[in-house]
Image (cartoon, rainbow, N blue to C red; front, top):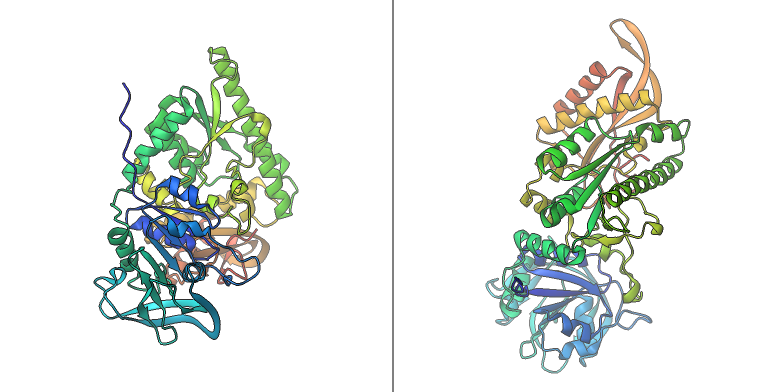
Length: 531
């Protein structure tokens, strides 16, 4: 029996002109429970019309509309009879293409400002007469196109917000999407709900249902293999695919010997016992450790671990194919698809200003860059989601909090948190230390309040005293940072009592350590991980 087609969701398309805030616009609209999608700036009017959006947002950008090679819009977009909101550079483009004037006035406006609302624009409904806003621009609109009128102004800009309500075209000189515009959410809300007539139909439940339908349509009766790391992204993909296709999914979990304490137990328990996912566990720890013997250079460590992972994963998939052929799975063993935890930021960051939109999406091999000879087609069920949305999906799919909200963990594992040579003894010291750091952060309720908290084993030994005896043992550096996306980070001012407790436990309980230091550097100039 054929199922009825699901009704189309409301949709806002965002054309990206290179603003650092483009992703923020997308996230803000999704927070309103309306689906948003970010497209390259030179997407044609025909492609946009085919997508049937309820509205379009033109992002900001660093260029000037008159610069040579500045990103331009297909002007036919303004004739689609779809509501359009231009933000900063997007406003300049609108004015430039529709007959207005844009100039660099020499009055660069950056930072906080006060918006004076001058008429009853639908965009500012319910906001009163003044709104605090955040500006970031050098150019200004100096003459409006025909049909436009002023909706609001600031001290330096008489055209801080403009509109042509007949054609439903709106432009803002400021950024409503950033936190520094406190009532910006309401402005976007007015555009999305009242002007674009969107409904609140972007929910995690509806996404999961749609994603399962898409996976079933793509995969059919074939089988899917997934490299499961125990991290958030691959875990959510595993849970989602299992919901969609059940035993057609097999996960491969590789123990490279560089995992945290009991990590392999947790993954096997959650996915094997609780979710009943088909799980192939490969203990390759000795292979990895022997290859790392004597290696000190961090880049060489990463390369060795990455290359060996590919070999181990490929061998594991060949074993699956052989087993499946033996069971009558067909010439290709039934395994035709490789699943990956590609996220929306991965896709967006592949889009370069000036690039060819047909070639902008790079392949993200979360499992380390698998060879093409494996002949798998990709399944990427969460490529529409931001990181926070992936976590929401994980909770809805029944994954435990310890996995959904776990902190980022480097692909090469503890190897890059041991400065210098990786040995079984140094791994033992760092694992024991890491267990203490995690347990104390969780017990104090700080674990879920920070971006990352971890220990680094330094190749530094120093003199200490324990029980009236001289010691000469290792130093641990404690690294705790707060961040939004890992691009920048600041060290966390943990309570002294907590720092003291962590330090005392490490020195007293971990054999081989007699000193703990706290890393108080920011990123930049430092990185979050030490290697």
